[in-house]
Length: 293
Picture 1: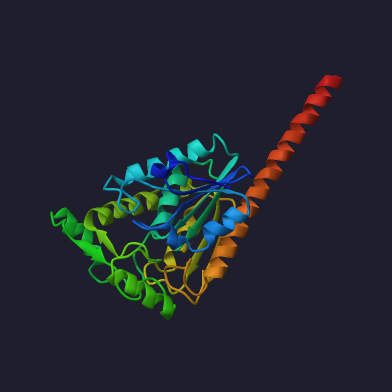
Picture 2: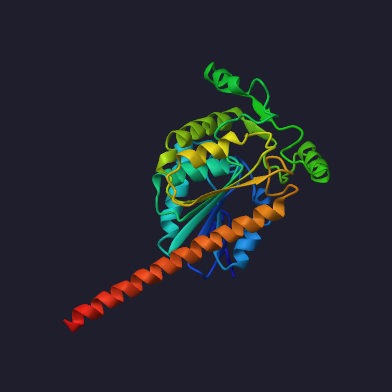
């Protein structure tokens, strides 16, 4: 097993070199961490695939501030680089990471599989504060030195996990929640990302799996419905959960999320390999026929 070398440590939060020829890019939420992804990285590694969690300047925690278009470009460049040493690529994103996955897939149609976990295109969940739509207006008016603070239920229905997250938040430590406080500048750029991704959904052609909770307190079921309706993917599937909130990778139904994500990626990989082998065999037959002639 390979892990990130010194050069990769600046580029990746985590990197594991697999041997199947399939690479999986994982994108946690805005300013989030690998902890948010739960057991997904471990299971994908067990399947033999390469796993890459990039450190995206301006998007990942403690990396400064950049324009949302640079977030998209950074991941797109990673896809292109991985395709130099891998035959196929899948992406898995959580929350705003899922939105970023969409934005990348809209401009790069070489991505075979796309798993969107609790994607956010509309902030319309039951716990979104009434003033959330005003945040962009406040920012445009020049008030930019504020932070949006996460509060209960912290994206989780599981009470024990919620207590642990709340303790970590108060101690300003990293938790499964990700960032407890989002700077105004990051929120502003994330809203631009959402608008961009929403506008170009018809450009998505990757095999698509969405897993979403009907009780998501941040993004209602309208979010996956919109993606399924507008995406041009040949394969489109939605799995609905009922016993968790927004952070579905670590909440009560996390095993379903992890297993369905892994199964989907493996299926995408197997289908790609089968198609590639069939094409190779057909080319071989054509060459034989021509040689006979």
